[in-house]
Image (cartoon, rainbow, N blue to C red; front, side):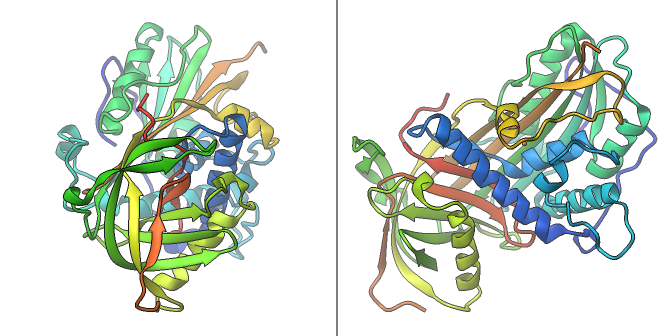
Amino acid sequence: MFGGSARAQAYDTDAVHREISLEDAPVAAEAAAACAALSESLLRFRLGENPAANALTCPVGTALTIALLYAGSDAPADGVEELLGVASSADGSGAAADDARDQTWSALQNSLLIYEPTEAQLENYNPKAIPEIPLLHIANRVLLVGDDPAVEQSYLDAAREWYDATTEHAALSDAKAALDAWAQRHTGGLIRSSGIEITEDTRLVLQNALLFAAGWAWPFDANDTADEDFTLSDGTVVTARLMRDKLRLPYAQGQGWQAVRLQYAEGSGRTVMDVFLPEVGTNPSDLPEGTWAEASAALDANAYGQQRMAEVRLALPTFDLAPGPVNLLAFLTAQGITLDSLEHIGENLEVDQAVQQVRLMVKEEGTVAGALTEVSITESAVPDEEDNPVSFIVDHPFVVRILDQLTGLVLIEGVIMDPTATTG
């Protein structure tokens, strides 16, 4: 989207990005639901590895990177269509399955660009300053590596046409610096280095970046923020900084959980943060699978007046979390998905790394989040309430979900086990 990166040169392509509207997406709702399911599955996988650790994910970044990997392909790897929510893409229009996949995810990406910053805004971005109007930046890049990466021009054209991906080229010795520079620029400095290890067999790397920043519709008063107890999953009590306010909010509750929705300011009011709080003594991962989606659906109904709003006495921790790189290949393998069938990109190629890094900051003024999703491809050897306020005191592990209400896409989601953890 924006120019070349340090140590990388632009690579010519005559392809032009298609401006596909959401109305032309064959299975947008199904794809958004699949994105939410992907988010929950990945978070549960992470918690299975380390139940006490914070876990963050950018599901839309994961989905877009996998869609980019198979741009223009008519034979993606087994399970990819299901993962992206386009397996049932018989929309009656006669569109080929691969076109339906690319049309859907291209349209979803385009629909999120209403908050896209200018080049100057991105260049001068300061993560400590919350913008008056929400900022949501999404960028894709294909970096060709080495003297002769031997990548099909038709793939590079499809990447540009469907996902507005820029293509650049770097020498093997310059590739890591080029990846780092692009990551830092397109995440606003929140993620400063690539998670990919360059080897002599690396032929290309796909990068997807997301940067989100928005102020609350009703900012918290910093004077009301105070040190309070937060109980970890093992019963240990730590001291967290809890913001407090009394607000009228969409509110929902179910078996063993309650949830509220916080609105961001200005713009079209599309982006929100849902906060899911299990009952005391219950970890988020202990709730049945699908509970978080159920809670968001209930909040949707309440937000539009079909059920109830509530006066909520809210206490929510501030935090700045970056749990570290996530190996997406391990997760995808556990789901039975192997990112193979890369003949549309070139001969004798295989995915050797898929990594995601996410940082999420929540404070009195608003929210800032950055995510970087990368795939490395190598030459082979041959995933209405009563007057009494509801108490919503977030003093034990909880879930946050930032989503776009128009599409239903989950941008960032996290299970916060310890808001006092230091940023890695």
